[in-house]
Image (cartoon, rainbow, N blue to C red; front, side):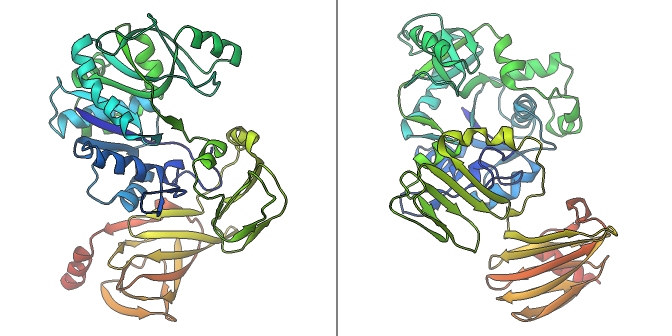
Length: 457
């Protein structure tokens, strides 16, 4: 069986720590067994390694999250890349094409899909592994996992089975689904043995390939990438699951939690205080998460969540925190903090002047031995002030060594790259008519190729 973790999300529900490039699954607010900070995606991947399932697992994500995944999980993790952010049906369709045409997976193989951020115990992944046997025994086209509800929640969708109990094979036929009901309806559904829909399901690869063929879509990964915009931007639930009649569900009666809102996430944090600041003892139930370099002091404030990052500051009562996505619906800004394969950066300041000129200031950290790609910009110039550490830089095929206190000027159109000899930081000031990611004209990525360019010239 192949496992595919879907990594997406717009980054609004855990704002301001999450943004369009750093969704909730990348926030290092949990703690691993060694007592070190850990993100949700790192926790899930560690659990897959511990249960022996990582070798048959893939991550499916958009381009904007690839470097974040590599930063947290390493470069050996197999990633299936969407050319643009769509919904779950296009993402899973592209995944099927990749498994078939690139990875060489048989159409008879079972594929299990699950979110990248479930907060679960090891027994959950044992239940996921059982889906393969359930598919064989039931002859169903889809096999789901349904969590036995702890209470009548309005936050989750429900799976309603046709019977009261699972049969000898540990599964039940599915009658229908109900999306996020009111509390009274949720209570009625639970009385009918309904289960929480945790977004985990399995199918034979050939089942989805047949759906693509019926839609006239290619089974080749590269070809489907080119036609990706032709796929309906619709969830897999709406496009496939709710149209399918032959579905079974495996009840799961273990620990499962969706850490999708601030109030649920903070319940699983080992400390109510992360980052600079102070929380008084009489601030009962209050959590402070501060990524800024300035301290935040909380005095006598109960049941609040205070979160601060370069993207903004949030102060909310815990019970009201799920409203943030609705409140920020029309709010758009560039990410002010990003993790990359080489390190991370934080936006310090951004100004757009009346005459149209823009100035963006970043503090950039590069890990020892890592490099930023050899690139140039048509619409901006840059000035780098080295703050700490040592590095090698290439400017138009000429190599230079720099250290703390050095200043590097990079005029518009200059080819440039930097390799951290030690861990290093520098301040980058961009000035130009349009400071956008599309103006990063990458020439080559690997430092060996950059050195070769210098040699050839």
